[in-house]
Amino acid sequence: MNSTIAIDIRLRDLVSRLDVAPQRFHRYRVQKPRPTIKELLLPLFIQVGSSTTLRADSLGFWRLGDERYWLPRFVFQRTQVVKPRITIGVFAGVHGDEPAGVLGLIDFLRDLDMNPELGRDFQLWIYPLCNPSGYVDGTRHSRAGKDLNREFWKDSPEPEVKLIEEEIRRRKFDGIISLHSDDTSDGVYGFVRGATLTKHLLAPALAAAEHALPRNKNDHIDGFYAIEGIIHSGYGGILSAPPDQHPAPFEIVLETPHLAPMELQQKAFLLALEAILSEYRRLISYAADI
Ligand SMILES: [Zn+2]
Image (cartoon, helix red, strand yellow):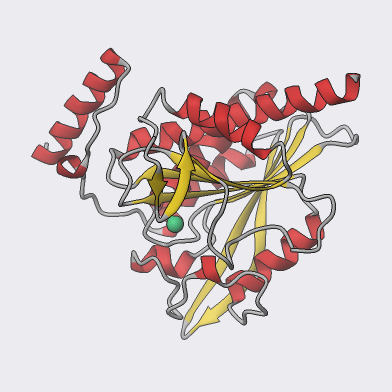
């Protein structure tokens, strides 16, 4: 066993026993070869083949030289009974060098399929790999050299952005969640925008994620003013609802500390996503009873 992996496992044991996570992670980074896109997604497609709650397809294809790239899409619905549902889009891998969100979303899909009650009342549209060429290259940017998370709603010609923009416009999601990792942060935090209830979803999500990783409680994170790990502003051009969508959906960007052990980042995403679903369901049913 590689010694860095051994350290990682000891750290995980420590964290799970004490239910507290260490404050700094840079010494524990595990360098493992990344799986190829096929290695990453094939087990999931096999699972979808025998699932009654999941289906999978592609949002579209494009060519880069001799290679063909595609944007995988998964849809979760607990039963096939036709009824109105809350639709949420969840996106990961917009930055190609942030695999935690990709792996976290794959875990989330598996968890939903095994425990469909988690997703009761929802139709979940899940896009785990939004920048496949960046993932293959291990780079933040796409192979075209673009930070895709600065390109949205600016008439960008990038194929990934165009496909995702069309999809977001078509679906008119009630909520949009994006998963990212930040190598300058020692803890989990998030951005809120859109509907005013959004911060009431992010707060319980961060509390849930704290069972895996600490929260970043700094006053300033990534150059923004933050309160208890919640930032109310953000960058322009990020993956988001169209500026003219009314009513505005809730929009959350979740960030894990990029240098923390991968499995803890995946767990943090899983806990946060499940907390958002249960809290949103609770808020909506409460509103309906008023
Ligand atoms: Zn990112």
